[in-house]
Image (cartoon, rainbow, N blue to C red; front, side, top):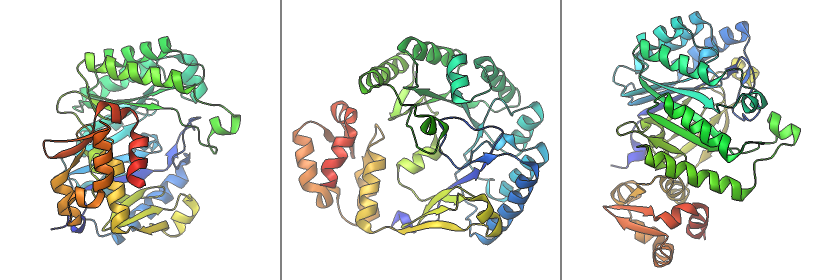
Length: 370
């Protein structure tokens, strides 16, 4: 059975509100207003009612924006909307800003089955946090984690950034060490990308030079391995048994539901983006801004682009099941060329990049495109 004909087992719900705007953020968001959030919940209720969501989900991820910027009663209403779909969920994640979590909200998340949190740590450095528009300190993150653990949410991931303007290797290293001292289960480390419609973009900021960024990334990979974290994806590192199951669904190129203003989804070879315009969403809940019907060749290439980000690579059996042909039949010439160059390898039923190939993944993908 073609895997793409199965109902999605993952759901992403986007909360398009923040209490304040981070300078680097390009995700759909607007400054929180109580009335707008109430109207959004009305529209979200209507969208969920209209959508055919299979209740046999394995992962749910509430992102944003800032889910915890909602008032307690609004967050409760949001979680109640998802209650019918989460009884069998294995991993239920909520993104959390330490500025907007309190004891009442932590208890509410736990009561509705949330069992994993993703927190924006970003940096330990007060100057960089101010530059990014973050209003918390590293100690606030520690307190947030303690609060979650006190309420039984112990699977916690921290996001950090590198290649920030003015960031030195020493500042990065201290940030990573500080984050590790809080004993997270998972770390995501992202290099700064400047988008023109962000505060950084409008102010003309730029990431650090490529050599410094590469040195930072090399140190991150080496140091986290020494500390017992497995790098399982280009930007993601986990303790044993703590890989993000929801994000693995993306990298395995599985289908997933996208719900709410600013969300994206993929179902049965159709990729869609729900409108990023809150006014349009309130007028027409679930309105799709773009809908792309992916050809089989498109889906093969996107499977490659996502799957080779993983250290484990792409399952050759799953590729054959999904597309009805072997990987070699689809990409034999590029496969032979890249194997001969020592950039990819087949091992244990998977096609993956070698360490050399992983370091230049974009170049590897270009050869498959050609």
